[in-house]
Amino acid sequence: MRKRLAKGEVLFTYGSSPDALFCVDRGMIRVSVTASNGREAVVSMLEPGQWFGEVSLFIDAPRVYDTRAIVDSELLVVSAQAFHEIVDGRPDFLMEFIRLICRRYRWALEWIDETILQPLPVRLARRLLAAQHAHLLSAPEGSGSALRLSQEDLGQMLGVSRQSINRQLKEWESQRLLRLDYGRVTVLDQDALRRLA
Image (cartoon, rainbow, N blue to C red; front, side, top):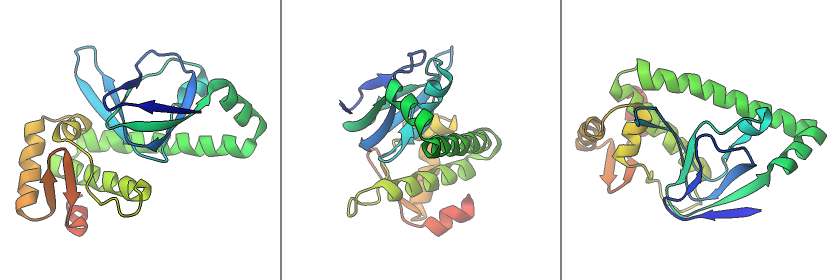
């Protein structure tokens, strides 16, 4: 089954019951959490080929994050019933999902390090390199290397203000490490960013 989302459309929110597993087929999905004081943190930007929603299905618990389409998007949808039939009957599929969850756990620990413990230039360089790696793996050939990331999104991912992100990106743009366009960042010098990360 497929589901189409318009730009800005919400797929599910915190507390929603787990009714399906999803895979981004086209577009980009923003995953975020919102604190009780209203402050939002962007946890991830999911690109084509990335699955999500499996944890709530495994433990039969409500969703713990919000998802929204950043651009017009299309998702593959596996119902909860079909998901359970697949993992119950196919140990190889079950192992793939266990590996996926373990990778996400490792990523979550790295995200804490990036978001809390490192100085902003290190965190931002790492985030841009990770986003570029994910983009290059999933982007159709010839689609370009510009990352669809706004400065506000980057600030929410790293727990800092948009102004702080803007200052750092402008500094790197003046050093020709990257190019800034509206809502997009193009990395020009990966090696220099790796040295900063």
